Image (cartoon, rainbow, N blue to C red):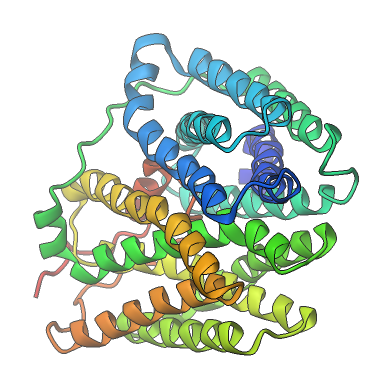
Length: 414
């Protein structure tokens, strides 16, 4: 790991600064939207737009890179991110914000793809798994740090929009001055849905459901928090707790998943998440309990994403990984687009408990489907390694993680 950090620290530092900016803008918009009197459902559309742009960027960025190169794409999209972060404060209108969120989601997706291609190029087969782990840890630390910065200014002013814009601009310096040009790459066509469903029905359904859970946690937590009367400091602490949970529980859950039937673990985590979120929706607990529940939600949702990728990987061979990674990301992206809209509708329909109710329902659906699939298929014969992944990872990171974790066989489709 020390060797990886020594060779990739400029890239990791730049990514962390990017994630500070991304973490701040998601939380800040939910808070500022409430201050500006924008309704919950309108804000859910705004939040959903990020994931629509992210999905679009994952499809178009590789062609942009082939046409003009990594450096130009990275610099152009980074400049757009920096500009949008400032423009939010100058035009507090939900329709304008929706358009800006599509643009910033597109840009972040492209920046991730470019950064991850550099990371791949800087890693060997022996160090790629460690490099990906470091990359995902840095992403989560950046988002957590972004929540801390939410308390240094007034969300009704301009300072909190300027800070992430400056940090994003600064993030380019260590990356562009230190990395070698990444090799050209071809984007993989997503595997056809029918083919992917035959390979891993649970992986596909789970990725769709977890896309909705992640987008609700990442996009709607601040909207929900303002609606139930939490302070900015409390909202920031709640969102930080989600990512602390994800960071802490990834490795223990990954360790277990490499030794036992992953479907049992998926079922157990989904049931635990459904029960915890269901209780939160019904009981309206105090803030201390909310922090614990946020940690549980993040500690289940983030590892479940990695677990579903690893489970799908158990039924693939090397020739299918690129297409499968693109297909899984597309399925996850569709779920992420729908998630904030359904969450906003539930909050408006049943009140603040609707935020937790949506997550509980998604987790319950995953648990039911996992239990049913266990009656339809035997455990995979060749089990690959668990690889830590962030739900914001691009297809390059997912594909690299699948290759690094590939079991010593061609997979199984029993």
